[in-house]
Amino acid sequence: MRICVAHETLFHYSSPPSGVIQTLRLTPRSHTGQYVVDWRIDVSADCRLDPQEDAFGNIIHAFSTNGPIAELRLLVEGEVETQDVAGLVRGLSHEDAARFSFLLATPLILAAGVFKLPDLTGHLGDGVRGQALVGAACAAAAGLVSVSFLVRWFRTRTLWPFGIYCVVAGSACIAYFA
Image (cartoon, rainbow, N blue to C red):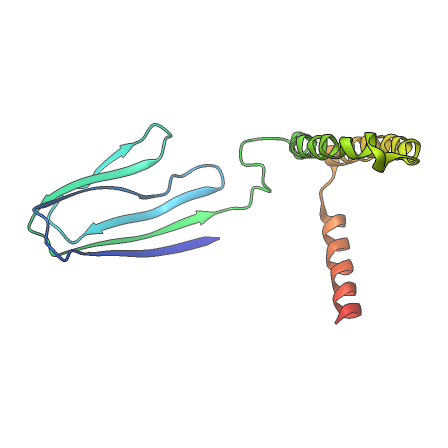
């Protein structure tokens, strides 16, 4: 997909300064899934744009100009070409991406369990501790089975069946609840 960008920033100074120093972070970087076809920054003041790279690898432009300046206009225009890399921008395999996404949920689930533990050990847990332990064990087993199935699935297949299911189920819900 090609994306055309046109951005304008206009500075009005009520009291014109004797000079202006600006650092611009308006330039995208080419990387996997994104290619900068054309990019241009125009400044209304007489100055030289010095491209630099900051500590994080971002492209920045610094400039200074002498005044007095009543108005300063920045115009950025460019074209960026993107391509779908299925969320695997940094070279992860589908299997590794699936493992990582499951791993992301683990701290949140653990925190929720720790947060509710006082309720289970207190008077609110009277009579349900056994059921809660059996339920937790069943949930852990079902989670392990489903994660191992999905990791094996992603070794050779894609998410097309799940996407079709989402469209069909979503359409059915809209039709039913509308």
